[in-house]
Image 1 (cartoon, rainbow, N blue to C red):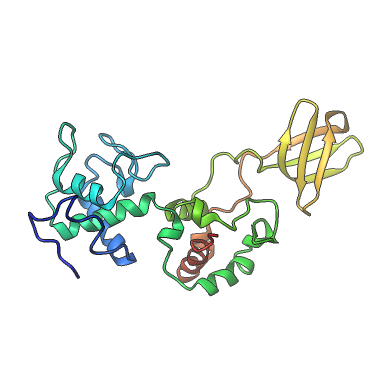
Image 2: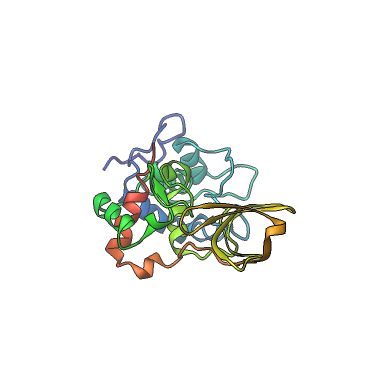
Length: 249
């Protein structure tokens, strides 16, 4: 392990993290962050009572390893951000953790067996029933072929474990009853005053005018399960994340 000497490291002298960004470095950085930084910032980088979220979908002034190291080690003059009072190595670990919160999953892929994760995706986890990867799979959910280049590891983990209060537009579960009494279940892709576009569970797109529709029932919960950390064994959940975090063109 390369140690940055106390009092010698600066943004100019250390342009990148000498400890790297391995899983062990990031994990220890998370522990240090939650032990030392949550008086102001929230746990795991969420928004806190006196400081902003560090992993939100926004643009940050300090983005590089060197800039983050300098802010954590020396504080930010003119603000409420004080020096962390940690060793340089520990500041680098916190830096790695903050970078992991902001990076795409492909930059910090999860540990695990990618091949076993793929087998789970198409098998036991049944993700492929709704999601497509490289032209294979279902249409009810978003295409995941490039998901690791779009979402962070944290966002991917939350997608699998945190219930969504409202389904996003284009993926609202719905049942349409036609004037002839036919009931069509699927997701609403679009709706206007005069028409409905529903993708049914069999993958067919139904275009219906309002005059053809007797009733529409829209569910308030997403079709996406939010309990994969419980329905899968711990090692299976890890392997599924290992597969998803490597889906990037």
